[in-house]
Image 1 (cartoon, rainbow over the protein chains, first blue to last red):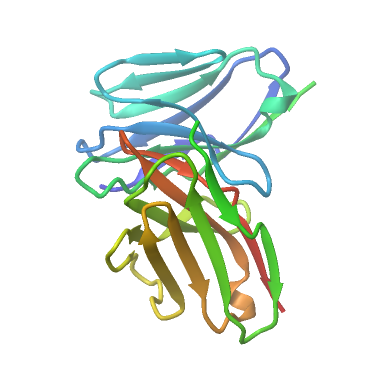
Image 2: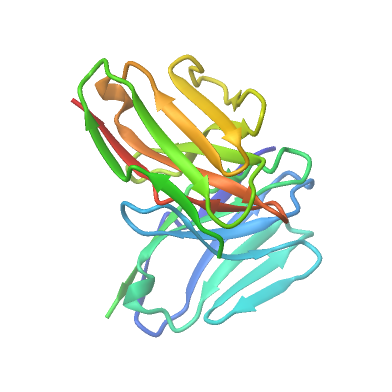
Length: 113
Length: 114
């Protein structure tokens, strides 16, 4: 019940294309869903996050879509750039579990020029 | 976003020595910090939750006597890897919980035990 399942494991997209990464969760007590971007040898950086009271959040080229009934959320990267090549992690947490983040398995994105 | 400073970024030590890693939240007070371990090409594995002024809560399978955590102030948590061995070589990352339950991560520490 604490798992967050992320797919795909790896993704190759042409420059200018749309990158889509999906996550699914089981615990309905989760109320915070962040996405992190991690470059090799660096710590994860918070990219964008959503709470279940909205179905979509957009920040620049990054959009989270959230489907509460399906218990799924996804990250869309519009106009993907080579600089977006990194590993992306979705995560979930609930206010009742000390704020511990449950991470997905990660998606390695490669954007080809 | 908020800044979490982690130091050192890389450490190489001999087997049997102890190594201390510091994690500081620079622009907010963090009653809760977290310590993670990450193996190559894998996700982050939570090791322990560090609570200011109280004992850390360790995840199942993590040796609390091996990985000592101290959270003596609202802006500093430390992880000490005691009597390090080559199998402890890994990438260690801390995070600090900001208001709104948002976690900000440090840059990580690459530990290599010879």
